Length: 256
Length: 268
Image (cartoon, rainbow over all chains, first blue to last red; front, side):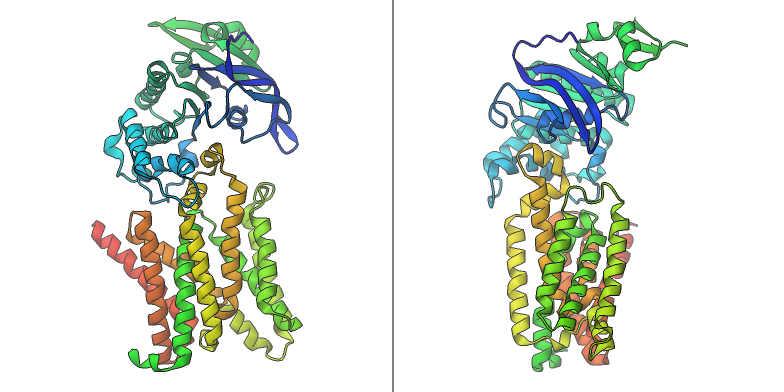
C-alpha cells in the first residue's frame, strides 16, 4: 500500500462494496490523482468493475467512503467506457449517434444537441482517429473499433478522467496494444487521468504508472515497480510467481 | 375498398385502432430493442385480468386495468426485478396466472365465453366514437411525451450505466418508460384485446429492423406498416367476413414475411 498521490481527485478510505448481503471488496484504500494512469488488475469476480462503479458514484460503499477532491461534473468530469459486450448489437445506431449520446446531458431535457455538440463529436472522433467510422453501424465494427468508438464517446463528454471497464478483454494481440497505447497517449499528451480494469497483468503492467492488484480481498496499490514484485504477487494471488524482464518489458510467470 | 368507409362503425374502428397501432409500433421498437418482449406480453395479460375484474364487479374495467398495470409497472421497473429470480420465469408465472384469472373471473358472468373471446381478440368493430376519440387523444399524448424525451429514452435504453455517470437517474427513467407503456396497454386492451396489442408491440418493430439499418427508418417503417396493416386487415375482415383483430395480425405477419424475403433477395 505504497501509492503516493499529492492531491487526490478520488480517494477510497477503507471502502467495502457489495450487492445484497455479500461483500465483494472490503477495507480498500487507494487514491487517484490528476493525470495518473492506474491499472486495476485481478481475476474475474475480484470486484474490479464494482470498484469502478463506486468510483463513478453509481454504487454506494457499504462501509468507508469515496472522497472526491474536486466538484464532480464540473472540475472532475468522468468519461466512462463500459465493456463493449455490455452494449447490445441489435440497436441500429451509427458510431456518430452513439458518440453524440455523450452530449445529451449537456443539451438538457427537451432539447436536441446543437452545432457545438456536433463539433465536440467531430473532435472526439478525430482524437481517436476514427473519423471514417462515423456513419458505420456500431454493431458491425470489430472489437478494437468498437472500443475506440466508446472511448471517443467518453471523450465527447468533455471528460478529464477516463474510467474503462476491461477495454482489452477478448481482443487480439495487436488490438490490445493499440488500445493500451491509445490510453497512454491520452494520458501523456492530453493530461487525462486514466483508470481501467483488466485481468491481464502482463499487458497492463507495461503501460500504466500505477497498479492496484486485487484478489480475494488481498490487494496492493502503488507504482508499478513497487507492486510488481514476486513477493507481493505471491501474497495476493497465493501462487509462486517470478517477475522478470524481457526486451525491457516486465513479464510475470507462474513458477512450476 | 373505399366502400367500407361509408359505415360509421368501420370509420370509428379504423381511427381508434390506427392510433393505437402506430403508437404501439413506436413503443414496440423500444420493447424489441430492450429485449423486453415478454414484459409487454405479460403487461397485456395483467391488464386483461383488470378488465375481467371490471366486468365481474361492474366497476370501470379501464380503472381496474390501469390499477393492475400500474402495480405491474412498479414491479417490473424495480432494480431487483430479475436479479434474485430469473426474469423470464417470473414473467411466465405472471402471464399464466393472470391469464387464467382473467378467464375464471368472467367465466360465470352473463356473457362468459363471449367475454373471454373479446379479452383475447378484442372487439374492434364495437368501439364507440367517443371511445375511439379519447383513445386517439391518449395515444397521441403518449407519443408526444415519448418523442419529446426521445434522446433520454434512447440513451437510458442503450447504456444506462454511462447515462448514470452523467447524472441521469436510470431507475426513474425506467419507471417513466414502463409507466407510458403500461398506461397505453391498460387503456387499449379492452378495445383491441391481448393478441393484437402484443402483435402491435412486436411485429411492426421487427419489420422495421428487417427493412432498415437506421433507428429513424426502423421507427418510420414500424409505424407505417402498423397503419397499413390496420387498414388492410379491417378491409379483408369486412370483405371476407373474418374477425378483424386476427386479420390485422395476419396482415402484419404477411408484411413481415415479405420484408424478410425482400431483404434476403436484396442481399444475394
